[in-house]
Image (cartoon, rainbow, N blue to C red; front, side):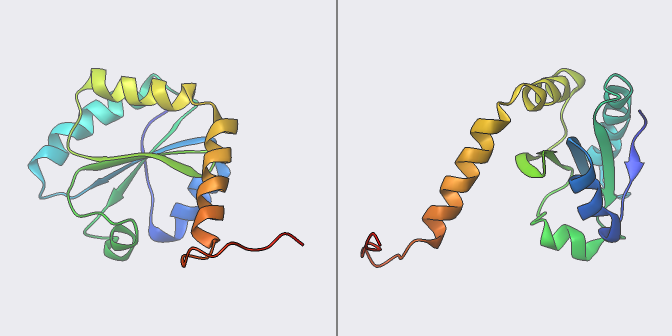
Length: 134
C-alpha cells in the first residue's frame, strides 16, 4: 500500500477506522524528512495491512501542535486507536521494519488494560485520600 497524505480533518477517522496506522510528520524543507520519505514509502509497499500516512507539518500546523510535534521527522504508530510508539528522527529501513513488526506483535489486551489502569490512576484523588468502598 502506498503512503497517504492526511489532513487534520482526516486524522481522527484514519486512526479510528484502521487497526494499525503509522504517521510520518514531515515538512518539505526538512532534509532528514526527505531522506526518510523513500524508506517510508518502500516499507509501506511490504505491509498492505498497515496504513502509512503522512502529515505535512507546514500545511497542518494545528494538527502538529495538537500531536506535540517539536522535531521532524517524527513517526507515530497507533494500534486499535492507541498511540503505541512516537519517536523523532529518521529511521533506516531495518529500524522501520522493526517498529512495524513490534506494533503488529503487541498484546493489545495487555495494552488496553494498561491504558485503563493509567486512566483510573489519573482520575483518582491526588491528595492521598482514598475513595471509600460503597
